[in-house]
Amino acid sequence: MGIKTCTKCHEDLPSTSEYFNKRTRSVDGLQPLCKVCENIINWRYYKNNTESRLINVRAYAKKNQHKTRERNIKKIYGKEIQDIMDMMTFQKGCCAICNESLINPDSIKNYAIDHNHSTGKVRGLLCNNCNTSLGLMKENREAILEMVKYLDQEDD
Image (cartoon, rainbow, N blue to C red):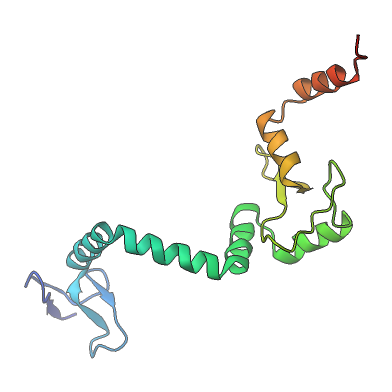
């Protein structure tokens, strides 16, 4: 194990990946700056370029809506997009609650993936109105049943 000098702080450190990030183009395979100096430079850039970074992130997300949606489905629900499409086919393209069509060519997010917040298990696909209603009712079965009773009352 050799010694390498950081080009920023000029500290002599062991020439290992513990102290220097990897860089394939470099002769020794390591970055010229130590990890501490790189972190400081990256943090400053991150802090000083918040607006431009946000603009770039938003532009990427808008341009790649399908990729972003697929990645989020995998990350949040542990499902592949094909699993969701199979669920859509099983539900005949309709909301699992109100049976309204979930197909809206104007929107990438024209349906909500409903899931049990305790277990994380996906229950079905809902229109945004039904999903919002469930959320506002905090999925409280008793309160929802009371609403049904209220609606069933005859007008006096």
